[in-house]
Image (cartoon, one colour):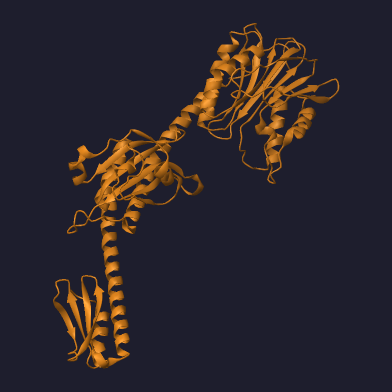
Length: 527
């Protein structure tokens, strides 16, 4: 064996400054690789282990305090040699890891055109080659289901030869125990298998482990916008060449770094694909949602109607519609699903379709809402959403309207005779909370010049740059100032402009939807 130059120089100096002391470098076969000094006839032997060998010093028995000094020098040389050996080992492992990562990176253009299984399988295989572990497994996280699906599994040659002895994987496993810990974190998690025991339940990935299991979450995105895609698991480190097969190997920083690197690569590739797929889905949902909104106001003699729906994202949870009732009246409805994402948008599309069907079957707004509550309860509960809605049933040239609400914002009624705004409170339960609630309706009599405002809480709960909400009182005040002199469209546009001024350029965090109905008491409304 060879030792580094600085260590050699120090060992050669010892016999020169301390006569009678000799030092030998012994290789792992027991032979002398180097000798420094002749040594005394009667001596005491000191030893220190080296990587791949040892140091032996012969010190005269009557050397006294020199004995401690020589021992300290030997320890210093041995520590330096161990450090150099560790550094060389780390550099060698790093070079191997780089080669494996570059190899996988070269394969990415080929496999990126494949599906999730092909990409994950390529990553698991490359990771197994780089780490020399028995099993590498990729599990895809199923959001909303608290479970993971087995997507890819690559095993070492000896593990494949003993495949008949391996337990079968459950295709879907719950997120609990070790897997839950991995998915909840941001770094590497390592668990030891208890002596004589197993980890997890039969069918889980960690149940395969005989010594250790290492897991790292696979995520996509940056900072607080990262989302979870899955988990990469490494199971049981294999012995290196020349080591007994029965020796238990433990994961070190090499496997940690490689696992984290492959998890990052998988996260980038799979995340980019999922992001592209989500954008397509969002675009389709946005198109569908735009199509279900009315193209224009209905023709209602004696009423001037205007509406606006401004989602805060690509897909919103707000909705308005003009729906024919079975008795010939028009149900002017506004609704708000909790949240403003793809799930909320799809719930709203479902509610819209169901409401149109139910309205054609019932004569009263209360009957429509009660039937809608029954039919939507399961979907809303399952998706952990709720729905608020309000509607007025209108007949042309008739100032008597019926109002019904399901936990929605108050109805505002501007009275031309008093130049004041009345609030009709909503006291009924939201949709999705009870299986079969009742929704009483109220008759509201309008006089010429009176105006109705249906709106969602995206208006009243909007905030300015200090965090203060717009509020019901301000909305009522603005509505009262606009209603006497303007058409329904101008009233609505005025409210939106005032809201924009109030927010002072702040981006809204909720959808903004409103419907204005102005009763003129004659056929045709103001322009």
